[in-house]
Amino acid sequence: MRIDIWSDIVCPFCYVGKRNLELALAEFEHRDEVEVVWHSFELDPSATEHPAGSLPEMIAGKYQMPLEQAIASQESIAERAREVGLDFNWRQARYGNTFDAHRVIHYAAEQGLASAAQEAFKKAYFTQGRSVQDHESILDIASEIGLDTAEVEAVLKSDRYAVDVRADEQLAHQLGINGVPFFLIESKWAVNGAQPAEALVQALRQVWEQTHQVEFLNPLAGAAGDAAGNNAAEAGPSCDVNGNCS
Amino acid sequence: MRIDIWSDIVCPFCYVGKRNLELALAEFEHRDEVEVVWHSFELDPSATEHPAGSLPEMIAGKYQMPLEQAIASQESIAERAREVGLDFNWRQARYGNTFDAHRVIHYAAEQGLASAAQEAFKKAYFTQGRSVQDHESILDIASEIGLDTAEVEAVLKSDRYAVDVRADEQLAHQLGINGVPFFLIESKWAVNGAQPAEALVQALRQVWEQTHQVEFLNPLAGAAGDAAGNNAAEAGPSCDVNGNCS
Image (tube, rainbow over all chains, first blue to last red; front, top):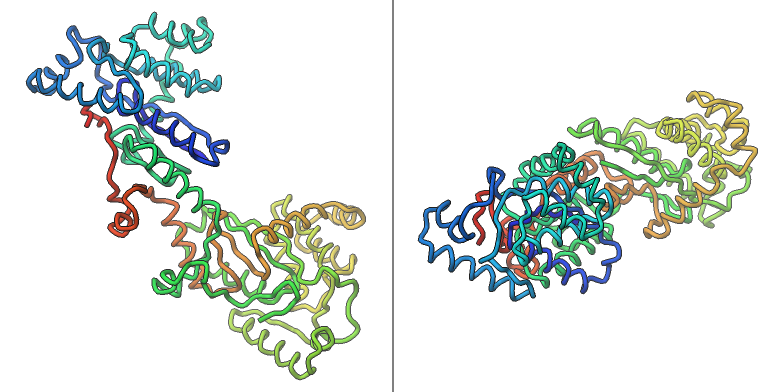
């Protein structure tokens, strides 16, 4: 079972959603058959450098809201993060552009380290007050999860994986995704936003049941036939294992 | 979109079902994206040689029914075949074992000729009164659809593709298929028996719609939420494209 996730590093609910998914997978009986595929999504592609002030100051300026309101909002988000065991040090957060970090995560994915990279970058931004934009900082974070420093340096100095980041974002656009985290299960069933672990595990079970059970179609029977249970759909004429044709 | 079909050559409703599917595909707007995969199913694996008498005589003997009843049954089946333009010459039908023909169809599938082979063998048995068991006859039928005679001879003289026929039948058993034709769309939606072309085209459209639309899950909302429309499922907290987190 495949789960595609769109998320950004500087998106607190993406970190909460990641943790909720981990909690859900711990409960899910078929977790060994789950494959997670991460997709890039930039909340703020236009961000070019670290803002001078704190995160609430940046937000207050960007959305023209009172500083107190921006602070209250960050405190509220931090409280929700705390509920799933995450420490959101919003006072230290170094807001910035995440494009290069996403490129490095795509490189990490090729090494089988996408989830580790997602965790490391989110923790760096969210908890550790580290830049996820400056190349020196990205190199440190990447090396901590075991990525080859020379390779990551080569990625950062080039355009490598830019096309992958853009393809992810184009796909998000095509799917009508305008908020993250966004979870797509088996290319079909969507969970929008950081829903609680119990909702995620129910969603996983619901999809598992739907994809592991043959559903009999009897389209001409109409809605009444469906309501009576799809698996009772009337068969057409057939020949059985004993050679009886009727 | 993939359609897996289990069928046997000596199964009249499998020929009717094949024709119904062709009629359905002619109507179906996404027919160019349909791939058909044929699977072997033997109605009578124990058949060892052509029975001495006619098909109704064989049936009357096998099922201990009056000959008149067996004839009436064949006439009824022929009438249903006629309705979709097929000519079931049951008086000439040469009932027999189909294992080797199924092996040859698997070889044909490797050459991209599975559907042609299905048609040729069914027509041979059903309409032309030809054996689909005797190797000489199988070779003729295979060469008529362009298969290499030496290769088909080598298949017939060996055990090649026996494992494929048995794997198909084992899969049918696992899926609980005990009558053919059996159509499985996208490994999930089943059409059981030779349903009319209009039912098949509706089934194809139904599956197409279900597989080409993202469905939003909100499992904790329960049945009431679903009844209100899955696509209205409540989102969890998220950060939007403008960086707003709520």
